[in-house]
Image 1 (cartoon, rainbow, N blue to C red):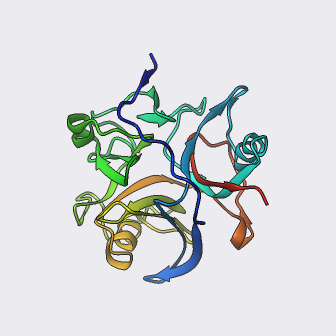
Image 2: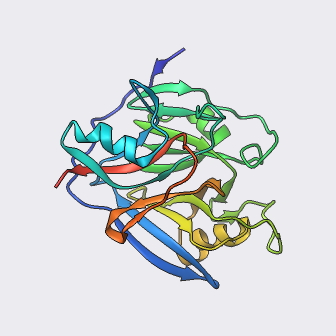
Length: 240
């Protein structure tokens, strides 16, 4: 059953533009996109014809309003039908419930967490989210947590040979910045987590996905293609 989140504020005006750049850390290449609270950051999943599944279909929906994506990436794990695996809130409406039990796969490798777009940006461990029940205009649950209160997830091993192209998000301590990262090389979890903590100085970061990770960054002439996606996160700007 759908329910409305409470105490939500209106979305911010898009007065700034996301900054995307290429960088490297510990021998691997990454692309970073930094978003501030002055931007219109949203989550997207479905329209009248079902799940969007691609950046192009989100852009087609926004075009009717004279808008377009400034940047975007996939934003959380999903089932074969593209429905979110865990909590999903869009425009204040919860369409998928929070999951706090452990389980198979990366999502169930506790602690996992929620990326919340509200009065500030937050990455919150899932059981803490359940206890606090913060007001989120948009939220997506994924896992595992990469960094929690400045500490790496205890099960992320430095020498792991499980390497993929991976993507995720970290937030600043004051919640005014969200940094989205995608690896351009195959990396393991430990290396990806250290990017957020040691290179970017972010005390909380959440894994979105691997292998299917994709980025839309027109300023970098980048529009990754691939399998249909579930949740998508991106900034919305006026169409030029």
